Length: 284
View (cartoon, rainbow, N blue to C red):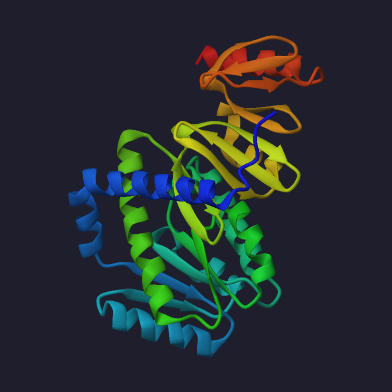
């Protein structure tokens, strides 16, 4: 139904568009971003390897001596003793003892949600550090900001930290203007994408195509993960399609027409549920 974006040049164009959007937002809110950079960051490091904790602490002190660092040797210690909401950034190992980084991140996300807040718009920004690249794909199902592969280099750590500083500023902006964003992985890079830019998600085998106002973005994952993350403003009208309600232009029992002109298949088993959800949405 839609053309797959497999050509490397097209992916490159998409990445450039995302970078341009991010640079534009950063430019418009330059004063806020500079304020964030000048603020003292409170960073947590959770890793069961003492050498890894010390290495990252050393790098952070070299990058910015004003950074405040809290150390945790396990996920259990982090959850039991940390004031997690006070952390701006959390560097966390994935493979740790009984409670690994993924389960800890999920508990943090669930706790934020239970307090009526959006994990996507809340601190800390979680950056996984791991020696197991195969598990990186799971990171974005728990709202991770980014990841670093062990052994961690100083340059890569500084690069991700600078992007985290900008993202923290954008989170503050988002709270002020009620916008929200999600993290999307494209190739080896991770980008913040404004939810308001998204028309719908399409699942094609293991790939997810995100249809946005500025073009289509291809990533990997399960559409059910996006469905769980995005809440009631989105609806799964077919096993392969997750649409944003506000961009539904018209619909019938077989398809929904979106604001960009796309016609998205409607499952006959989903129509009544969609109708009820859509009526509830427009009555808000």
